[in-house]
Image (cartoon, rainbow, N blue to C red; front, side):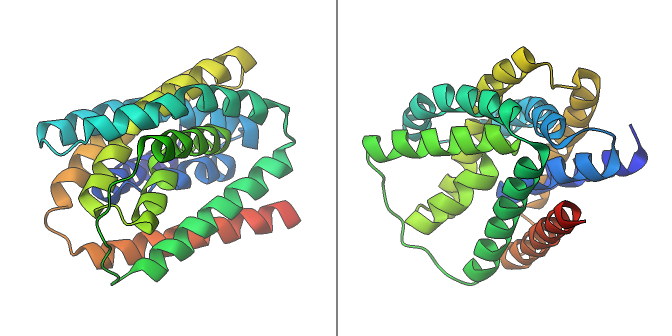
Length: 243
């Protein structure tokens, strides 16, 4: 593993710990900085996020802010969908996976940039909505190797869920997403276990740091940084596919 990948993993973990968005940057980094294919990169990053999911859940549970009822409903949809997403990924050509990652990173970046400075109405979502949302997030996250929060946080914020609740539940939802997704990916033989474990351990340390720093950095400035990083990663992937 190169130093650059280790730095990326640490930054990804910090961003996940701060705002829940950051996992989208790891698969593109694996494609750019290692010899993994796009399919192997998404599979390996999914396994890496097992570690950030465990640490993120513990950190936010210790703070007493995880909405467990909401998490339970999301998980009902997440588990089967994440397993299916991993299996579908293995059947797709690498260019399709890259374009999907590009679309996702650009969506997250633009959404977060547009959301800067916008206060949200705090709403409660029903069980059916949460189960359906869990299925969508589980499938999309496993398919793209992005862990869960990168999809769930923007959607919850767009639906009017309180920001702290959105970030906290996204930390905990990582575990059912990536465990189910990893089970699927291990059946395909796409996971680089050693690399994923190493990156996951580094990113997990970043999650702890991010959760601490999150209380000391202006949220809007951080959101802008995440937005620009996601947009840059999306443009990079589009260029990579074209060239």
